[in-house]
Length: 99
Image (tube, rainbow, N blue to C red; front, top):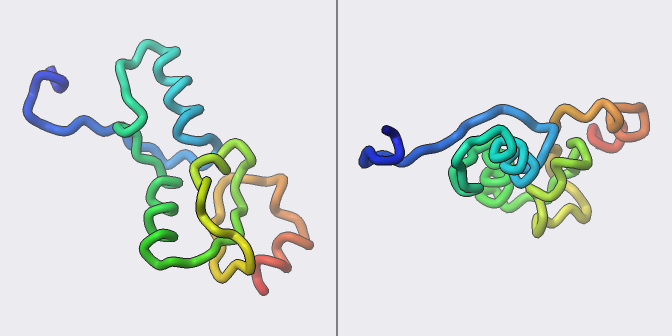
């Protein structure tokens, strides 16, 4: 019924462990009729903010989430994006993030 209604359909999630493309593959595999542009994640929101603020982030996100930041400059970071990525939470990386 939603598809035939005059409203935009969006699938919203706060996951930070996987890219939008991976999420799309998982959802279509479960039988959802969904397009990538209909998915809005917390990573989407983070990317939008990075672009609006024109900052260069240190990305503390799972490696599977990195494709959602393709094209975002990360040299000489002046911001930090934190996601669910326990492998990145160690002394060296946290020290780098605080600097």
